[in-house]
Image (cartoon, rainbow, N blue to C red):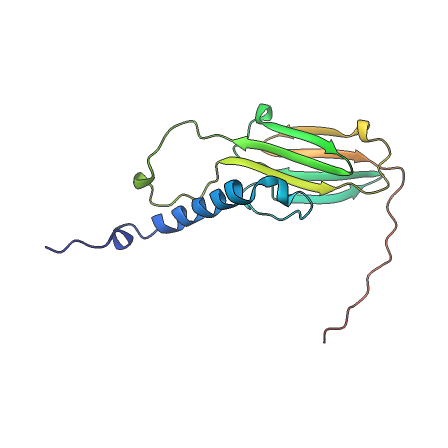
Amino acid sequence: MARLPAIWRDPFSITARMSRLMDELFRDFIGFEDFTDLDLDVFPGFGRTDIYLKDKTLVIETELPGARKEDIQVRVEDNRLVITGEVRREEEVRDENYIRMGRRYGAFRRVFPLPEEVEDKKAIRAKFENGVLRVEIPLKRVPETEGAFEVKID
């Protein structure tokens, strides 16, 4: 009896393997340091973020599912807010036992530029609860906006 190719026996394993390979490529070959100014969402499983103004406070809420408070760091570097950490897998499961690997594990890094209106960088506060990191940044004043306008598409 002919044996099916591995991809036909387990069609979902290829997507999980490709995802891990791409993550490793960015992590090992390019490195996190090259992305600090680009703010690319290289690892989309980590750090889906809402940013909004509440009174004179800029609020950044970032989803970090599976992370623990002790594995997250929030730092201010120059005029950037940097969130780093790691989500760890508690048990070892071999790749060939997976049908589909949809959750992410490993290191993450998100970088957000701080506005000029920050009142005092030392007054920035962070709280982690139910998988959501909430960072509150006090502002001197609400940033002025130029209003909305339409851009012509050529």
